[in-house]
Image (cartoon, rainbow, N blue to C red; front, side, top):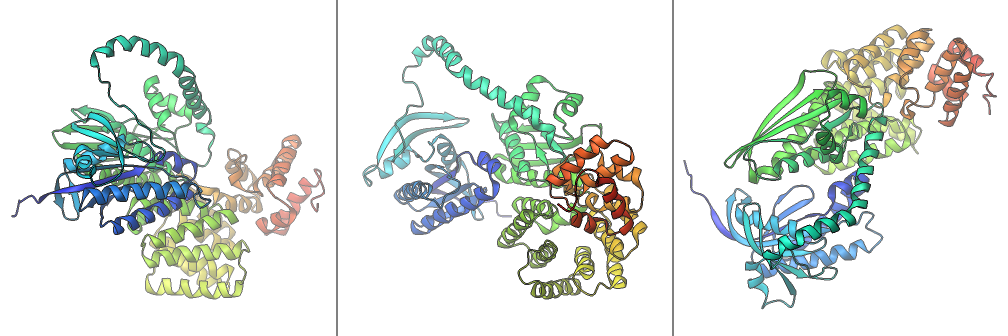
Length: 614
């Protein structure tokens, strides 16, 4: 076996986005769109200056260059291009980058580069100012007589195990700074003064931070129909590198928060509950937390072991656990792997049940999987805005190279929704396309989800052949019983007049998944129960969620009718008005109930509140 290590000297260019997580939290879609535009500028400059991109972590990029001068010229051009872009209307999110450049010994592993030469470049990048460039002394020595740039000497820096001499390259917007005191003996003299000044100056900011954390505490449990996830700060065991536990904790929180199907509490809350020594009852009662993520990091030499577990707050049992082993130079990769597997577990155990199992196979990277889950959540809103976002995310998945059969299936569901929401400008043409896509899917791939979309569109858009649609629906349940399968099959049974069978199937669907994401089943199941005169069951499934806007416009009117029957007219008037504010009217309630007797009962009960024709 060949154990020879391939070493060489290389110029390493490291960059990442300043405050990327905050940008993602504020507007994920626009942040990604702007990052792609910036990445296009960067890769174009790499090509111009003969740089080779050898590693990327989403918002971070590592490249090697044949010379120090070409790396520095590339960095300066990039920062100027980003500054120019940020001053234009094109930049809806103004991203800023830090850049670090070093030259040193590296190890070549396939197409990747590892070692201190890379690590110090990353340390320099972390030291750089926003929109700035920081280089090592070896780079400074190479370029000082070959370029006209001004440099600021930062002195000897020691970060973790790396010690290096650093220089800021001064470009527009950067200022000269000093990172290290020249007279260590004065440190003790100034320490007391500094503490006093810090207390006086920083107190308003500390107070503001505390207020923000308290605000997060107060709103944490306000999201209904979403699991609330709290990541407990990773616990360090043994001689782990300083700051590694926090880096992993922040990465998990940032990545999970990018999935819109759950509410992920901020890192501020995570560290605050650790300080307050909260227990399970505190998590549940004060924050509304439904699931906890806990973990530990153990290090022996260069080897690290990350252990993670997911638990339900109201249970003592661990519902998922995982151990991942890695070396420090694999940190970015292991963070993505840990986030992907944790997110899949959350999806299965907290959101959709086993629906996610197939998704994990279809979407092989964290970015793909996260986008796919967000697309599902947008589609299930059943609104024009949700539809537009679902179409946009499907396009992003296609750009990321997801299997074409998977994309065709997603496009079919989008097209079906487009027709149902009456957004199509050419319905007949879209129906032809939909028929062709769904027929091809069941003929060439034949997954449960393919038969599912074919069954539903048969009832809504094609021949309305109940025998064919029911045949496909039964096949779906047989192949892949789960929440989505029961949702579609129940719809087919309902449209074919088999109401009790539809009710039984939808009940099974609610039991098969931890939550009814977007209330997709409940929005169909509640009107059906009302239609079947199973009023106590209708009230039971609506009473705890009726105030959530996501439940839709018709449910408050159904609930108001139930309250009239109980003589609670004041509350009934409140929910009648709530339905009106959400867009409920007689035409829509007729479409929802689809039964003359049920419609007459509801309208009679609610007629006392106002003229329903207005």
